[in-house]
Image (cartoon, rainbow, N blue to C red; front, side, top):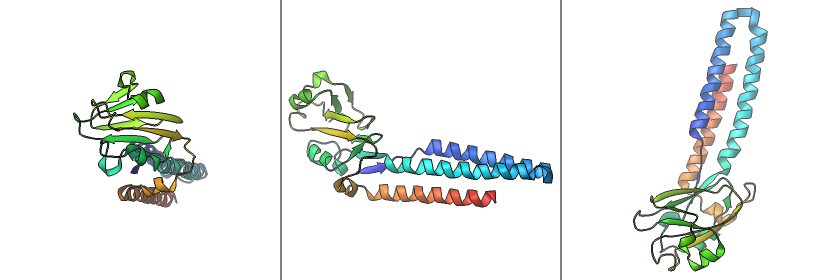
Length: 206
């Protein structure tokens, strides 16, 4: 299960700055009249280029990063074959793991080695979380190991290891098929929003 990550605050901030810049340019043109028309036409032309480059840079970034809800709809639970779930995913640099579980019943412990993972050696944990809605960012290529910190759960199989690949690596068909309907709608809505903003901005500049 994957969700596209949107940097909404950054996007909105950039758009606000962009429209403020355009407003100032249009006001200046009105005040100067014909005297500054050529200069302001140049500014508006540069604004068009800036906005289009902004969209081109923004869309691929939003489309590539994803959230993986560990265990799918069942979440982080001992009843789930977690490694089987993980084998159907493609984890890329920049993606996030989301661990959803009942706080107090389970927890998330990151282990530092294959040996610690195999032996459920929780004493050498690199990190632990217990909020019930934990997010782990995949910031680099490599293998990472996770287990439940509740006594006996790791030994019962509540653990998984994942391998993170470069952001430009192709996704597997299985991973693509796990994309939720909500994620698809969210991605399409983001595309429509950006397209609408682009069209409105170009009309505004003409």
